[in-house]
Length: 257
Image (cartoon, rainbow, N blue to C red; front, side, top):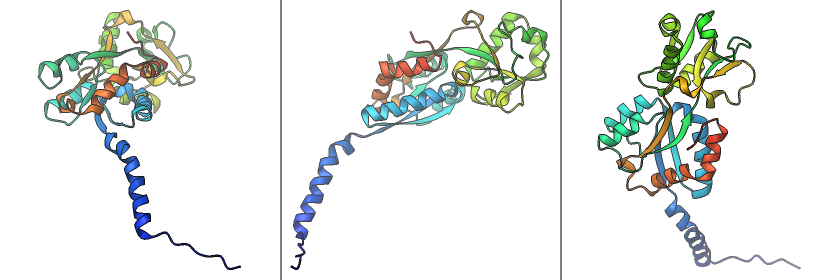
């Protein structure tokens, strides 16, 4: 018996393809993206939150990482960011006062914790007394003029009465990411970093700086006017306040109000 070959008429095939494309049209129409400026200390949680956001909404948060001060300067010069996740409350407040953000959208999404960290076991003690002893050549911090964690490091050293003595030993990173890299590569024996950067790092030694030793690191987010008409930008900020994002934020060692 000879099997017959059946041909689907081109017109029928074309209608089927059109139907398949139309079935995906709503998803394609609703999928969107938003440009998000993220403080360097929040790199890993932001990546995880963006993945969860996409899985939930289909929208994409395109993340850029850097120091809060640098982002502020870029935004005042027209950088096309739509959402700003700062490492402090000062820059979002300034950008709002400058008229570049949507009033009433600013909120604290995380409270950062500062850590004195070294890859060398035993170098950093449980009270930070190593800073007074000073038996090291280099201490890394983020640029205090641009990075809130750097400012908190300076405040901590000043409170301990060691800032002037340690000034010659400071290695300044452009962001908290670079401050950590100096320690990780051995360019500095120890450094002030964000807890989120070392929370999963095994070994070494560290001192979690008491919150009372520096001004609170209230990390605030705000919707920029460039994102006012973008539903994805608004949706990302709403997601950041939700339980799924909050769980991720807490996992990385941040406090949440």
